[in-house]
Image (cartoon, rainbow, N blue to C red; front, side, top):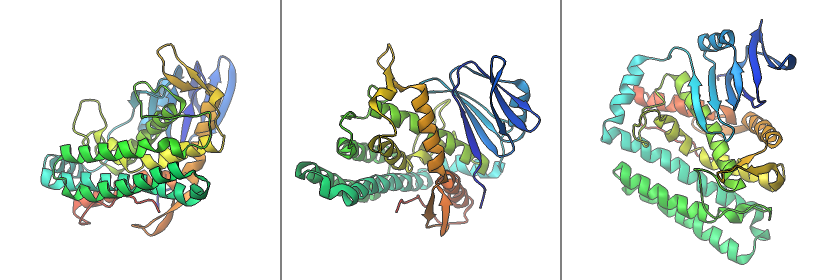
Length: 343
């Protein structure tokens, strides 16, 4: 099994990051703020005004370490990476599969099956853990939503085009986020709908921020496997969009949702940890963002049983393992793609 390497998140503004022998060093002015061994590094994610030295950038490019730049809201800006790895024959097969509906739609359908299954698991897990503490009205809403998600998942088998698949996914999302407020046990936080551009409340801000982190991990997993993150099956081709990474993200979104709920319900983040920008966008304050990123890294170290590999694996390796399954399917080593089903 591949070792889980580290991702470093740099959010100190006006930081200068450079390489000193085998260490990554971060300075602000003349003061050294951090010194970290570089040999187990997988990626750098920089928020806002962070400068990387050319020497460190060259080292990252030569050693498969990606550098991603995000603004202070977590919106993707740019990415620096070295030569593309992987087998050109695998990528060619991927591209041809994407243009063949008979082969691409079954993959897209299975990815959405994984998403809806895992959304349903989030609701079922809440009902199991807190059903006896939930008022009857909310309990009925959650039970109804769980049954509707099960029905939407079954109806995916009747979808034979991307448009109908996306329509069914949209219906499921409306059901799922329609009861998301019931999963929040802290009265200071409220949620009435999924809003992205920009997020206008703390819950949406957390979801958007964590989805951005997940997209980075999925894209890196695809690239390290030799797949093209820009050529998807569910999300159609669009210049500058990592369509396959967005495809892979779908089945992991419910895991991120539960991570966000945990941060809120365990009071690791409070309403005072958020601020509102002049355009109405809500974002985490810097210290709270540190808390979230530390919890994110800890979560990636937790282990889950991956039934296809029949192994307990770190959560942080799940995108890479799913990329491996997809690559095997495209090569013809297995009959179909197998989504990760959370149990």
